[in-house]
Amino acid sequence: MWRGNIIYEDREIEGERVELAGETNQIVYLGPNLTLRRCTVIVRVPASRLSIRRPRLIDCTVEFKQELRNHRGWVSAALKGCRVKGRLWGTDFGPFPGYSTWGEHGHVEACDFTEARLDACRFHGTDMSTVHLPRWPCFTIVDPIGRAAELSRLKWPGAFGSVVIEDLAANPPSTSSLSFHAPSVAKRLDTTAEELRAVLEGLACVVM
Image (cartoon, rainbow, N blue to C red; front, side, top):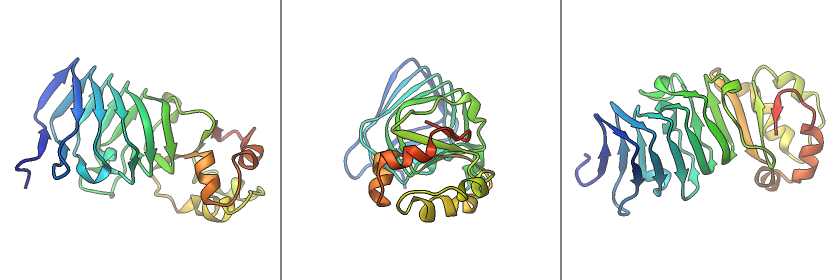
């Protein structure tokens, strides 16, 4: 199955630059029993060619050189003290039990996402007080399920209320937070970033 692909597993790499790149027919695989410590990890492959299966990244910098879209494999990765950069859409982090065979093994602790652009991204099973989140024009709803009723009582511009807010309670129970890039979500939901900000500002459950 993995013949001809690029496989990192069953080893520890420390203080190196790790380039996740390959030919268009190659899968880059970060597998079990892999520990990356104080490494710079450069991701140059799309989501369809990146397979994540329980790696541990400690004090690493992870930089996505192209937008990663709809990739939930990171829920099996344990990230501690890492810095994440680049554009992410529909990407999940942290333990997501039931999502996949490996989903319950994820972990996020003391990580810095301030240089990432997060849109429609979720953190699961994570103490968000240990995570540095990107600021405006990104914003993050913390405890979206617990805050769903409160947020549904507000008047939201465009389709943001009917598409996002009304669906908050339907997120998996493991959901700790939900992040968006305001200009992008506003364009999708027929509003503006400024109109969204006018409602978001001052909400205790929103980081922006």
